[in-house]
Length: 184
Image (cartoon, rainbow, N blue to C red; front, side, top):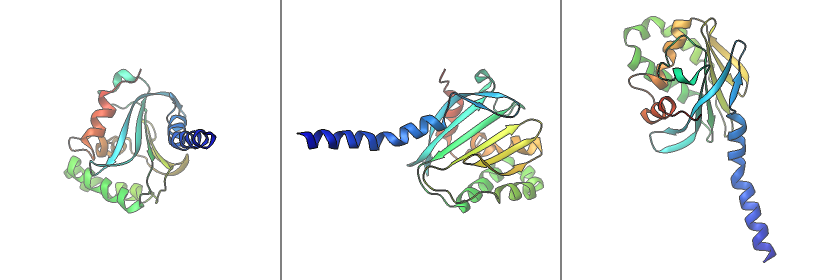
């Protein structure tokens, strides 16, 4: 009897670890250099529409602005991964969805996007990427709170968000979940 109780307690502890980590990494607020951003939505992150790879959260200075994601207001996207993913996958997906959504603009901005995408690294379970947009400084890419690179042009930085929020996003389900769900 005691062994069953201990086994159940151990299983509860083991299965709750990712939830605790996700709660810690998706706080209600994130403070950036210039703004305090509120978590407006959170969504499951899937690859190929089927495979759960993690979760994402969208932070804005005002959650009522969620319908205007391309406004020049501060925003923060956090992606927490539960599976290892090679850097090449991030680079290829970024390139593909920027080409689809930006058309001719992509060709003009490709060198800046290629430089930005070169900062992606292989990730392991538990890693998280942050994309932090500031209308004055552009887009910052962080891995586990460590700055990796920046896209300094604000117009290009907003355009980069088309990967997730464009007419043909990486995941329509992720886009809908992040833009249509208000947690508060």
